[in-house]
Image (cartoon, rainbow, N blue to C red; front, side, top):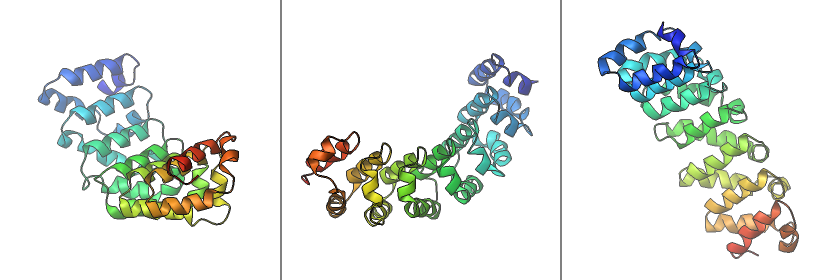
Length: 247
């Protein structure tokens, strides 16, 4: 009965309100009605909010069955408009030992997820979450570096590139920025006046080491500062170069 109510536009709000005020015992009983139905509820327009509230408000022992029901095919779930939200809530509330299966699935499918409208958010969450193993993060960083020019001009993948540069540890960040600096001739340069790529270059310049900034600046002088300033997108790079004394 509760599962049906959770699928209703008004009913889902009532169930969430009930979860908020219910006792621990009442919550434990309520959540049992969702067993075996978690995946369908997660992918429902209204019911997904109920599952999110359960994860946020209930104990890990009471909602662990949800994790198990969603672990088998989390790669496709990450590409779902509501499923991606649920995965992010799970990352926030469960520990690394419990999330191994989901992390493994995300890493396995990282290439399509990075470029997906919804999956890119899940990958970003994995990159910034402290419970993810170093090996999992490194696998994602390696894929980003191998495709860094293509990803930097991609509507969704570019968000992952920027987040990776901003959240990686020092060796990881250096590894990514070196990927930009050492890209084939014309690769980095093509980003300067690109409507999406210029943001990645700005982010790289923001987090680069002094030595990397010099190398970036040397490659970015494909146009004069004056030409850059008159360009719709390159003007942002020109501003960075001037601020850092590379003009």
